[in-house]
Image (cartoon, rainbow, N blue to C red; front, side, top):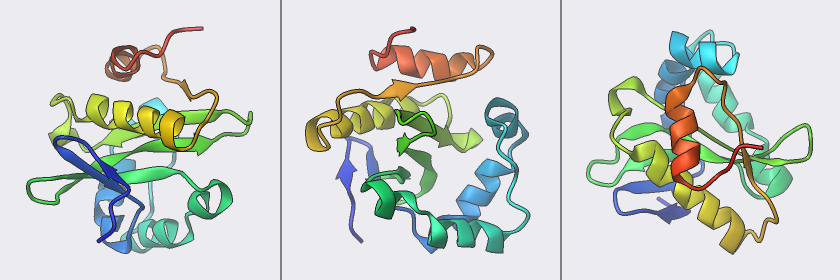
Length: 148
């Protein structure tokens, strides 16, 4: 298995079909829907299609990446960079409920930020969160992003 990069506790790699069950659970979480506005996947097959058709890696050379726990390979969620509609590179992350509050989002987001600046030589990376999403705002602050 090819990993893009790693942190002390995490492995990050492009999405694979085996990530579909975790992505289904993540996108069908009402809290995720509330803070993102993304619709749920209607089925496991829809989540698999999302993985197989994910265009970002081909379009820009980067994207959202699966985040796995180093110790057991468990799918924790995703984190990564995406060129948005405003032509800004956006840092995003989502983690399954059972893995929240353990610092994984901060660790993965910091690694993605570093990868974007050092490896991809991106001039700017933005992060956005709804004002009610206090946990995500804290992650963005911890990794040094500033409110503008």
